[in-house]
Amino acid sequence: MKEESIESLGEFGVIDRIASRARCLNKTSLVGIGDDCAVIACDGSTRRKVVTTDLLLEGIHFDLTYCPLRHLGYKAVAVNLSDVAAMNVRPQQITVSIGVSAKFSLKSIDELYEGIYAACERYGVDLVGGDTTSSLTGLTISITAIGDEESDRLSLRSGAKENDILCVSGDLGSAYMGLQLLEREKRVLKQSGSQTPDFGNYRYILQRQLRPEPRIDVVDFLREVDVVPTSMIDISDGLSSEVLHICKASGVGCRLYEEKIPIHEEAKRLAGELNINPIVAALNGGEDYELLFTIRQSDYEKFQSKVGPEIYAVGYITNAQKGTRLLTTGGDEAELKAQGWKMEVNV
Ligand code: ADP
Ligand code: MG
Image (cartoon, rainbow, N blue to C red):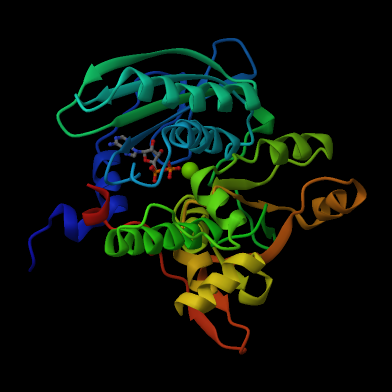
């Protein structure tokens, strides 16, 4: 038998291995490893704190040749707030820790924090702490985000039930296509030595890659229409992977309709140019930071009754025996596969 390694286990396998030893000693630790945030009780209160943390490394998660520091700061905050939104909670505080190498100037730190503060302002979040250290290998950013909500408004990954409707909050695959465009222009610049990249008519997908927005507006809308999703997750690794996370955590199966997956016209256009199937970009691309959630059928009408962000119904939940399948436009059924990020890309 092949010996187990980080590579053979993959990211999720390594996390499962870590989680298998976790024992929570404190009654206040309500949800531990395995959801978008941990959930913590405050004694004697029906309110809950949620907390999440993310680590971004230069050369792995971002490339400073095409990612301006201001955008990077904004994105680093946005992806953390997205995990809080994925619990159906409004974030309130963040802490930011940075490791900086000698090549960084004071001006570049200022630029990074311009983006961090811009995101804080946009989403009404306070920067309340962090840590600063030197680094031998480029820039490292770690952010922790905290939110606070009534316990009966929280959505975990584990609550999806048979016949619930599977919804997404926006188009998918755009962030991945934006990255393909940036990579292409980086190659062209290297070859030609030219200074000005040609991004053509692709503003939308570029912005989706460089400056994603956490869907806090969707959390606000769900409150307005008085709907609590039975389960929720944010789409950081691609639709397939996130649907499978919900199904595994909830002990259910699903049917996803290929033709209902929202894909932006720009993503389709570039996919055509680069010979990429846009559905594959939506299923496996990642970094869209839309919300994926399930709601009871009876709650679906509430969305229709009020003007708000567009919500797309992309499938439904079945019992576990029916498996997790994609119904293709051609009428076939395909097993959903979690592509996610492979460990060799991640570490
Ligand atoms: P997300 O994409 O929502 O940020 P991840 O896939 O990164 O979620 O992580 C899944 C779960 O595993 C989360 O609950 C996260 O807190 C936990 N987790 C990830 N890495 C570790 C680790 N090294 N130690 C403990 N928990 C971890
Ligand atoms: Mg998440």
